[in-house]
Length: 225
Image 1: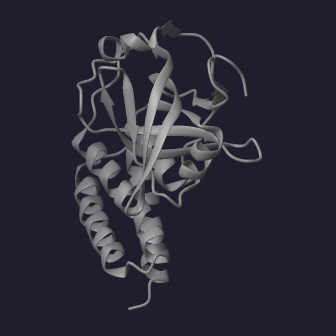
Image 2: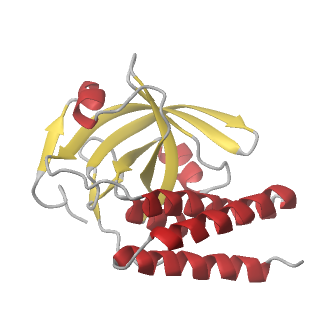
C-alpha cells in the first residue's frame, strides 16, 4: 500500500467536511468504510452513515457480528470513503468484478480506498449495541478529496446499491436464526435487482448487475425451502 494513492488529492481540515463535500446534516449516505483486520489486511464494506455538524460527528451502524464492527472495536479507527456506486456494490458483496486498491491513512492506522472521490479518516469514540447493530460515534480527524467532478448516479446504479445492501444482510440474519427477516431482505434484493437490470443498458454496470444476480441465485440455492 502507498500514500497518498497517487496525485489529485486535496487535504483539508475535518471541520470543512460539510462545505468540501456538500453534505447535509442527518442525511443517510451510502459509503465504503475501510479498516484493518487483525492481521493487518485491508477490509472494505458498504455502509450507511450520517454526519452531524456540531461537533463534527460521523455515525456508523455496522452489523454487530461483521468484520467491520470487530475491526473498529479493536482498532478504534477507520476511514469513510465516498465512492461511485460500482465500488459500493463491490464492497458490499465482494464480487471480484472490480479491483479495490488501498493506500494508508494520514492521521490514523487505517486503509483508504484509492478509487474514492473523498476520504474521511475517523477515530471511534463510543459504541452502543442496538438489536443486531453496533452504533458507532466517530470523530473525523482528516479529510482528503478530489477536485474532479463526480459523475451523476444513474437510476440503475442507485437501485443496484440498494439491492446489494439488502443481499449482504441475508446471511448474517440467517446465521442468527432470523429467517423471516432474511427472506424479506432476499425478496427486496431480487425486486431491486430486476429494476436495476432493466435500466442498466450496456457497459461495465451491466457486468456488475450480472455478478450480483449470480450471487443472489447462489444465496437462494443455499436457503432450503
